[in-house]
Every structure is written in C-alpha cells, then in structure tokens.
Image (spheres, rainbow, N blue to C red):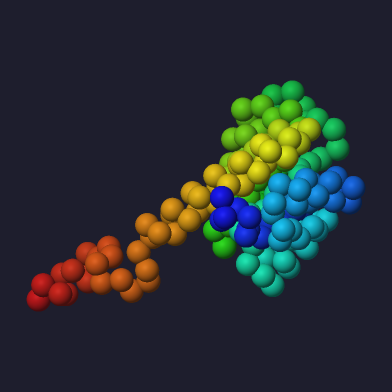
Length: 158
C-alpha cells in the first residue's frame, strides 16, 4: 500500500471542523499529503497548482433541505474531472438514485456519512489502483501500434 501512503488527497468541505477531522483521520491512517479547502473553486485552484491523486468532497452544492419527493438530489461537477483524477463524494444516507446522480456528475464513488475513516481509506486505495491500471493500459500519444483512423489507413495503403 505504498501507493496510497504517498498520495496527495484533496479534502473539500465547507465546514472547517469536519474538513479538519477528515484530514486528521486520513493522517492517522498514514496519508501525509493532504490539502484541505472549503469550496469547489478553491479545489479547482489546487488542481491547477499541484498534482492531486484523489479528491474527497463532502456534499457542498446541496440545496437547503431534502429535494421534493420523486426528485433526485443534484450534485456539482466533480473537481478534477478533466484531469482524470478520481473523486469521492461523502454523502449522508445515500440511496441508489443519489449514487447514480453522483456518478453522472463525475464522482467515482460515494461513501456514506457518518464517516468511517477505514472505509474512506480503502475506497481511496481502490480508486488509485484503478486509475493506475487505466494509465498503464492507455497507449501513449503517437504510439505507432495504437489505433489507426480509417482515412489514415487508406492513405497508407496507397
């Protein structure tokens, strides 16, 4: 599990106390590079300035109260989506529809609140392994054995 111990985890939570508690729980489990921010805008700035391996977001864009019956909750877009950084949404009492909505917003996983640090640690590890596997299987740009576009194949044949 060296991979997870060297990870840079971004914790996004508008409440400074729970943000700090989440960061401390991860530090106690061995993750040392943790950045704590309060908004998704600050998270975007952090992604622009440094490599972040995983983002952990507490449901920050939730409207006041519960949605009307029959409607799903709406979630803000996951930070780091365009950089292929995995993100985890921390959500109180998630139901199947909430998980689908979170996945549609770009989150890779949902972890239920109240938070169990060991569960979050395991989820971070599994997402990092999956991201690393995808990186290895992706052919490098300009790789000669990579996929060939049909027009390029026709030109090569002539």
